[in-house]
Amino acid sequence: MRNAIKEFIEPSDYEKHNLWENAIFVFDTNVLLNLYRYSAKTRNSLLDAFESFKDRIWIPYQVAYEYMNKRCEVIYETVQRYEQFKKEIDAFTSKAIETLRLTQSDEEVSELKRYLFKWLDSNKDRNLLVLSAEQDEILNKILTIFEGRVGEKVSDDELLAIKEEGKKRYEKSIPPGYKDDKKKKDKEDDNNAYGDLIIWKQIIKYAKATSKGIIYVTHDQKEDWWNIVKGKTIGPRIELRKEFMTEAQQEFHMYSMHSFISTYNKMNNNLIDKSAVEEVIGLEKANKRNRRANRNVKTISLSEKIARTEETLDKIQNRIDRRKKIMGDIENKYQNQGVELPENIQTQYDNTKVKRQELEEIYEGKLRELEGLKQMVKMS
Image (cartoon, rainbow, N blue to C red; front, side, top):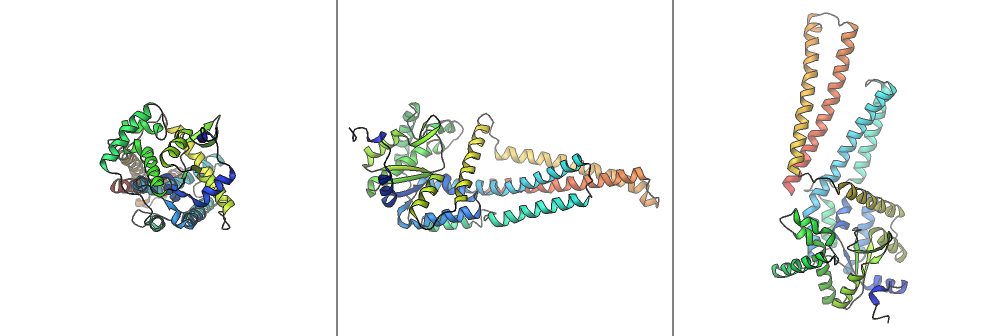
């Protein structure tokens, strides 16, 4: 009976340990891309862990393709996260001024802004390793670790066959990848919709060729990879286990990123810090929230984002120009004539100057955002 229903039986601790010691580790695209999002401590620990497996790591060509295709987008998304935080600091201090009835020139406000910006710059210097696609140290490390450990590109005929099979599988909700079926409606290149299935087929093919079991490590939490019962993740989908054992005659197991770290620490002397698990779980939760938030939100293209940002810049510039004119009129009427400004006019002049400076800071931040978007277009 055991052999007849083997795909339903979760491997024992002994079987998991044996597979860990002998299997090939395959890492998904999102595992590689998230290295740009982690803190330096977590990122370096994970890269060291990958390197420790030496000849027992491998990625399908599809993973390498997806990583290179999305790398620039993730780099500039991460850089812009810090730029966005600068806006949050400005918004916070403006709220503090309004709520506490302070003035922009108040020393406590200036001290608060200096502290927050200093902290942000320190965090950025410590954790943001890659600022541009041209100088990418993470890419260099990945290229070194996976040198000679990448599968061959799928032939056109094989790719066509996988896509034809994928259409039938997705109609019946056969894993993996059917949750990505909607992507092909929006993409001329439907590799995006069939990416998971292409990866899956390449993994099986590699396992057959090497007669090795596979451990697949992924950040993907969708039900078309995982057997989820009443909100609890049990293990890989039963269908995936059965297909793998039937096709490759080998063992297959999966780890989420945080369970991979936990297991790695049990199996090795060089431990990954526990804070890495917390960070990985935090990122997974954030991704879940973002997916829920984006389900009913129309996707905005880069060109649309650029157009909107340019429109915002024009509006900000008009507001700056209006304040310049107000200040210029006051200067012509009073200061240039050698007349001292009345108290109420002096207050108006000072407030206008402060607001103009705030707008100029916002303009500079928005301009940097525009440059980042244009850079993403060049790299895409």
